[in-house]
Image 1 (tube, rainbow, N blue to C red):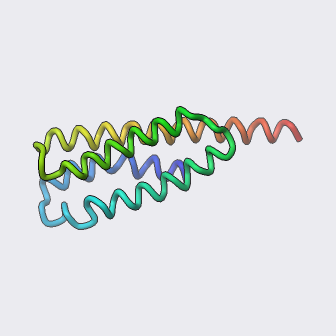
Image 2 (cartoon, rainbow, N blue to C red; image 1 turned 90 degrees about the vertical axis):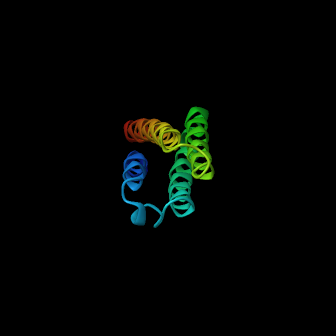
Length: 117
């Protein structure tokens, strides 16, 4: 599931940048619906990882990335589209980095458990 969330987080900046070109589609599912879906999937994925590896960097990256996405959503009508897009891209990249680290740590734990038995 972490891989699926990483793909979603990687695609979000692309979809949001396209949304500026396609105004009618832009606001369908945009904003809080996206943030809710991203937040729920990320919380599920990261909480599973936290129970196993307790890596604070994963949590820090999640908080930074998701926080940036939330701020970008809040500032949507208040800043230039370039600034908003940059915030979404930065937040998405940080979230993908958190997922990648979470995935790598989970694989290391699974590998060590398999060799222990």
